[in-house]
Length: 174
Image (tube, rainbow, N blue to C red; front, side):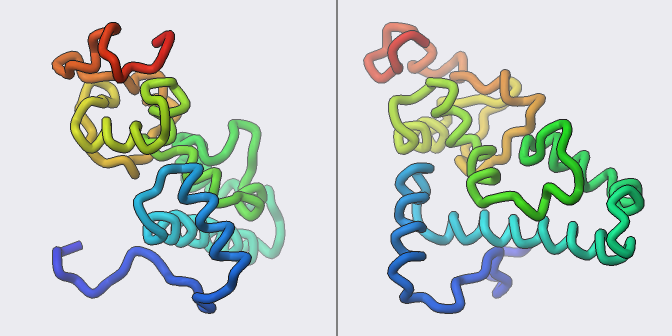
């Protein structure tokens, strides 16, 4: 996508002033350390896209899950590789996914869950400042989707001052 393009990567809510939805969004933004609602709306749009693809596949197969699964094994395998679906999950399980399933796969959340930072906000800062690597490569995008295979390779950059165990910002016991 070219810079300056008018194509948004997310959809805004149809009814912007619903107190319950606003409170729920604020809770998710705080829990996952998102910069703004746009990041949440991107994740929700990605989830809608996954569900739409699953519904279309099941509909084209006339509701026959086995046939739809066989035709869309690449789509299901990709979601399993990303860790959004579990190994035993099927195409029908895509319809029951929540936005938190997608937010849990962000580098920002994975780094926090691994104990590389005290808070998700600090995790975001470490990533933005280039202190975190994935599979040996520096990644400076907190929204980067970490695959299951890459999850164990998330670590501090060896050139970062944070790679020193005695650095004051390091979380206890890392």
